[in-house]
Length: 142
Image 1 (spheres, helix red, strand yellow):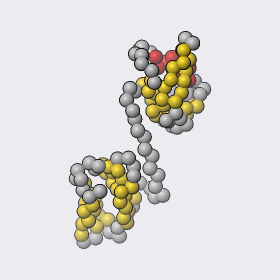
Image 2: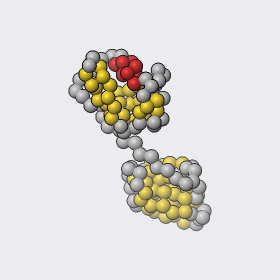
Image 3: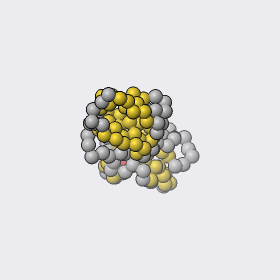
Image 4: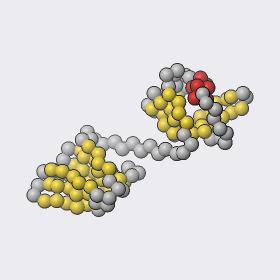
């Protein structure tokens, strides 16, 4: 179990601060995206939960605590079929679901999808997806 927190205050964190935060959070349930508060020496300290793995999770003594000073975006995309493969492109991803391909943007938005009777392969370039099927190819520029 892992927890990545972004401090919402300006102060350097000392070595071992992860242990202090873990001790304060033990037993609490946290979720990705929420803001949490702990009190230290009578002062409230605020954090944004960039990633709780799994989410929601209950913090215990084995939870790994990490701090990040940037932002992390997490996008979950669910499909009705099992995912066979994911191929990164310059602008997003191509998801292969059996004979169907789905082209997604980097934000997880569906740009294109099609099912092919004889899907043989997929090749990608920085700005194009080439689908090899049957006795031809289809070039997709999302």
